Image 1 (tube, rainbow, N blue to C red):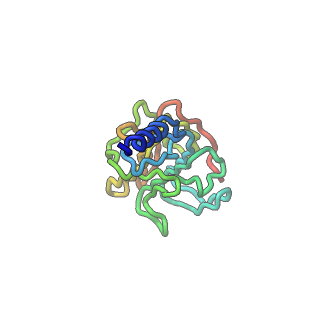
Image 2: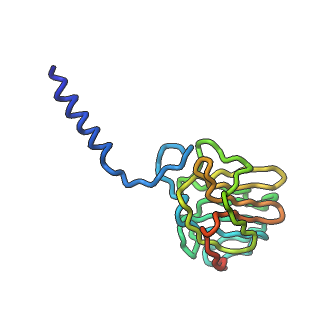
Image 3: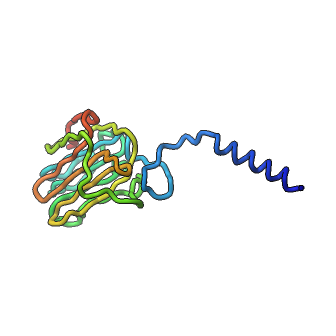
Length: 189
């Protein structure tokens, strides 16, 4: 009988904790750990269909391969701390890899991967050299998909919902985003 008051008090504390708002962002489906993801909402994309020379504004080296870079937020200097992911086409040159998803932004998918054929519903393809400032509805996780022969895709998704798809091949790179989600801007120099 002495346990009943203790059990009731414990139950009340649990009920209060469940009822309190947590203030966390939605968690991407299929992700690990349940921590909120930063990949979604405001993001910047750099589309380099023919690679680029060294960029002074953020000390980026010359990257000859076609590629797409993804950054969290809308910082026009594209700092390394906001670099979320990238995908490159062709055979990597020098220290350049095929792409990556960076741990510091917490958007790596540890759950069910996106399909290689995943598409953005009502998507618009951008295949010219440009910077895009986008606002995506929701958040997600990235999957880097190697399709063979230097062709790769980077998919930001929340389960079956695809927020963006970046494609890179030995000859070009492009990104597909929801219609109306992005505005074009000049690329950094």
